[in-house]
Image (cartoon, rainbow, N blue to C red; front, side, top):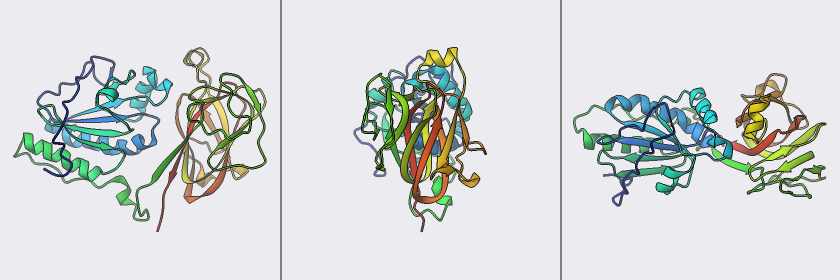
Length: 334
């Protein structure tokens, strides 16, 4: 066995009866090699790994391998089954996904990170764990070894290269960092600070730190988010150095309000105090520099050609608009 082999392996926890997506009941894994993928639909590392997991499902399902997703939510809206079902459909996920809203499997597996891959042998023992979006070749090699252990004469395909290997200008894997917006671990830099549940009228300071974000206008904080409460224009500003910037946003933090008043929220995105050039617009931003926030999810705001410092500004006029986090992807070229 390779270095990846867990000699002191725990047994795979039993799969709960519900709720499942893409399956009416828990998949049968007895006697099967199983790949278990813990993920969240707002996690950039999960989304960057998803094409590889989809490819593994396509390659190995016909050989009897059970590929199972475990969606453990990072934010409270991720416990809304309709949001996860939408993400599973939009992301073209065909394998069964368990909605781990009470963190049963997360806890039973002693999981710590999104994403994490577990490989379970045909006898139900966890033999491999890989935390984070990386070591894809090693993971697939471990999967193939477990398949060979169960079926010694099976023909297996060549191991696929990781996604970033096809981009020779990138000298190492991209780095991902995150800045939270709410009371719990938030990075608000305004001198007024947070006030739990109460709207605060903020003004932008004279100086800005890249370790914080800043707002102007009336905003109220929850544990996970900062929500706009004004009627005129509110601003959300941050300095950063990255190639890509994403944000976890919602038209409203209250699921009842989103259901009763399902209106989308327009947000204008500026970079360096002016509209973003077309070639740098993120995938969720329209050509006129506006973005439509229609449900709680992660949105791509900007795509720069290289990692460099910028100032990003979000302009919003809709009360209820909520920001949960910013995510930065930095790539380092030769």
